[in-house]
Amino acid sequence: MKISEKQLAQVNDRIKALVTAGSFYGKKLEEAGITSVANAEEFEKLPFSEKADLRDAYPLGLMTAPEEEIVRIHSSSGTTGLPVIIPYTAKDVDDWGEMFKRCYETAGITNQDRIHITPGYGLWTAGIGFQNGCEKLGAMAIPMGPGNTEKQLQMMMDLKSTVLCSTSSYALLLAEEIERRGIRDKIHLKKGVIGSERWGKAMRERIQGILGIELYDIYGLTEIYGPGIGINCPDSEYMHIWDDYVYLEIIDPQTGENLPDGEWGEIVITTLVKEGAPLIRYRTHDLSRIIPGECACGRTYPRIDIIKGRTDDMMKIKGVNVFPAQIEEVIAKCEGASSEYQIRISHFEGRDTMRLYVEAVDGSVDFEDLGKRIARKTKAAIGFTPIVKIVENGLLPRSEKKSKRVIDERYQ
Ligand code: ZN
Image 1 (cartoon, rainbow, N blue to C red):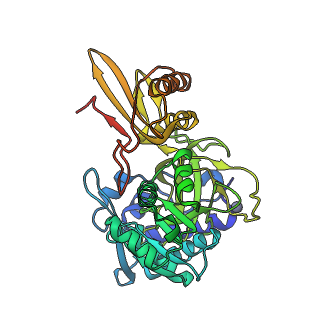
Image 2: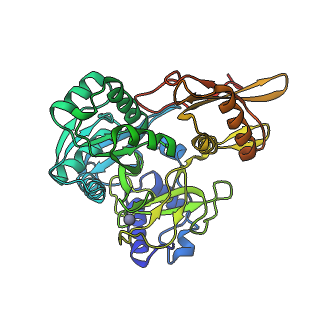
Image 3: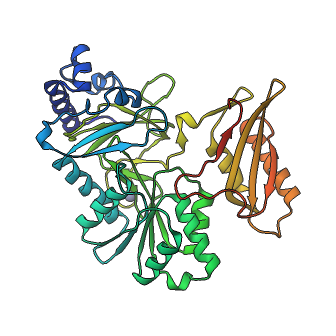
């Protein structure tokens, strides 16, 4: 996949806006002597933008439109250091809503639906993004926000919510609670739109198994509008990306070189029409690949695979690069194991040790046999044998936000 003539013209327009505004990236481009790009090769040589740069621009250094046109800011959670502030113009907010509406439509959601929104509202982009798209679609928004499972389930029953928007871990928590209380027949959910964290096949099947709903993966990040820049369609698990708003590349995270379609690497995104804070070649650190060929649904928007993890999830254990997704694939293939697991890495007497805690689906499972099978298959996948401990279902922590799967005790 190469950048089109139209997209190139849009990039040049954004470069011009950045330089004219003299904003953080405008100055950087000017210093590098870049005023435009003539072709795909030149585009692929443009410097990347990084989250660290965005922090340097705190608080409003990214602002590229005149202040009177900025109608809102959003901020990404700053787990380390300063947060990132992204200014939006009215057009940016509207464009984002259009993209989100397209996501809902792609999932077959209509203005007859009642959309139960559990992601948080506030500085970050989650809840309000789901809300904007819902209102544009003309569906009924039920703006719950996170937490208070009791009230969530009550509203879900009383208002007959048909669509659940949430993180995968919260969808699992709600599904398990619905099962435990035996209230599935009082729940009217038909679809789930799940975003903001990586999730595996086993977790998807567990949620689907309990609720019997169609699940859709939505993609996006605060730096680039928020959730809603792409979603999978009913014909495929791969996500269509709205390339009239954003241009997506896959690069080798080590070398920064563009990779051919089909190869796994880091997602890099350029905003094509954003005014408040345009970004050129922003490194997301999300791992995926471009899916070549056409989708059975007939949509021509390019597709990417389900996010496999983050470049910074990579764990170096005993000198081997390991991704949580590899462990997840092993567990998904072992009968008797549930979707929930936890990895603990420690360092003792000069050696790394990896302990893997996995939940059994129920009490009928032979824990010892399951542990041995997982240990054997993990060695085949990553090259060394972890210490595996099988625990009872429900013992590992569930979260209303993102589940913490990896605990590295080596550097604490
Ligand atoms: Zn499709």
